[in-house]
Length: 148
Image 1: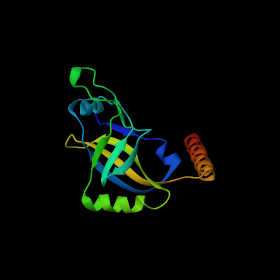
Image 2: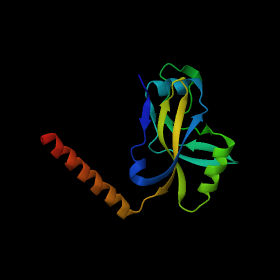
Image 3: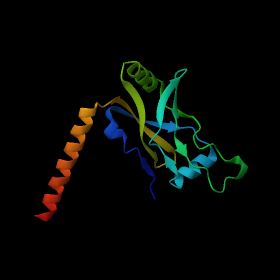
């Protein structure tokens, strides 16, 4: 069973420029909740605090069998990246209009939780309409190809 939690709004709301895969520092009950597919990244975003990349609003539900050692569902979590990647992202974020958003939360082959983040630029309203139009056209093409 693979865990793959996606942020579906990200592709619609933002133009994705660059993607990175980062580790997350988690507590024991958090990784258990992720393995039970009890996480939500749709409202999450990343910010820099003292050159440390932190993800905010990442909701990981409390573990049902956690007891008094359970974690807070929306606590801030540190992302783990190389220094070169951090400096590259930090330089791009300082440009106007760029932000860092999580795209996908998954567990790799070694059993570690990873967060795929993207350097993104917000779309304008007319770009969003264009995305909807392309999606509708692709859906119509797929529908016609199934009929034939």
